[in-house]
Length: 378
Ligand SMILES: Cc1cc2nc3c(=O)[nH]c(=O)nc-3n(C[C@H](O)[C@H](O)[C@H](O)COP(=O)(O)OP(=O)(O)OC[C@H]3O[C@@H](n4cnc5c(N)ncnc54)[C@H](O)[C@@H]3O)c2cc1C
Image 1: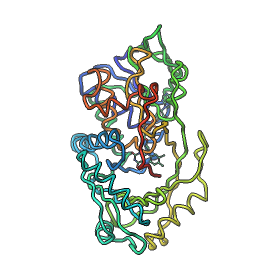
Image 2: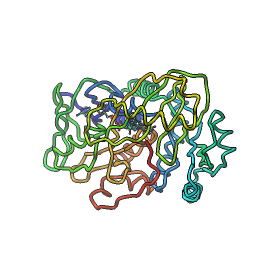
Image 3: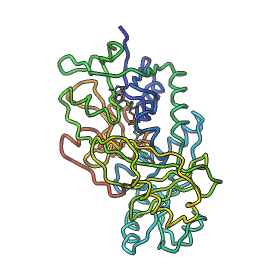
Image 4: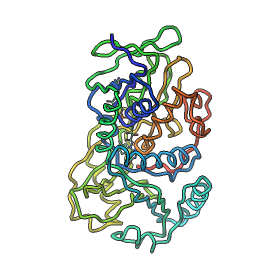
């Protein structure tokens, strides 16, 4: 029978980051189990954005720390990462006042965002039509990374550090003895371990419910398109504050665009024509020249949404050895580097030292201490 010190269920960025940090901190036998291929959940469907311009202390601090790790990891693991910033566009008078307040909070927590006028928006995004723009919030620490290359680099490094990654292995049950974890049952047999991390994205709720652990997570389809490649036009990810839509140019030149359209919980991941119309209408207003560029691909993936849009990262105290990292909403890629570090600290060192990171654990859900976040997009 196979044995592990820690089993990680899910081969998205949360699972691979967890395996990486456990190995770096000296754990010997780490096994990642992925039911399909690595990245096949939400990670390969993300829009590449990384930012710290949120409105809760927990999010701002977690992302600030994650951004530090993005830089270090991009150098150590060797993948492309750029601090091109985020520009939040204001088209209505009241937005400026609201974001001024957010910016003060960011600055007080060490995130140097600032309010900019429309001329500065034009300087940051030279190809934008500023006629309808009153100004914006600029987050210079923000940036982007290519999820495919990030996952490839994590995969290579984990294997070099002695970790095992098994794909095509579906975890069907987490095994317990009384109130402690003893392993998992999979489609390829049983694996023993005293510690199991559930980082299974949209599959997390179902796995934990079998243990009687209620996970208030909703899997909501979100849509994105990418255009054919274009010469480098602008570096920041741009958000239209009025609609929550976003646009970003990838390292390969394509523009990824997302916008909100209504969708239903656990809905099918299939393209809808009205999404293309919605997203094109929003962005043609700011970039009229986009009309001559074709959409190349369209995909849909789940945002796994918690009741307060903050992730649930940490132990589930009801069972010794049970941990979770899920409910990232649209922010699981950017927080990925620190997600694994937080979990490794819970497993090996009694949790992270930073109080805001400790507050992300499942305990807040059990105790009904939800955290508010107002800057949600896409
Ligand atoms: C359109 C879109 C745009 C987004 N844009 C951004 C963005 O710009 N920035 C950002 O930070 N985030 C973004 N996100 C969110 C981000 O993609 C996710 O939050 C993040 O990828 C979650 O990573 P994860 O590892 O937790 O989950 P996943 O990547 O979903 O990985 C979970 C894995 O677990 C596997 N699994 C499930 N059940 C089982 C089981 N029983 N046994 C074994 N394996 C199992 C799945 O196959 C999957 O591969 C976006 C999401 C979408 C859909």
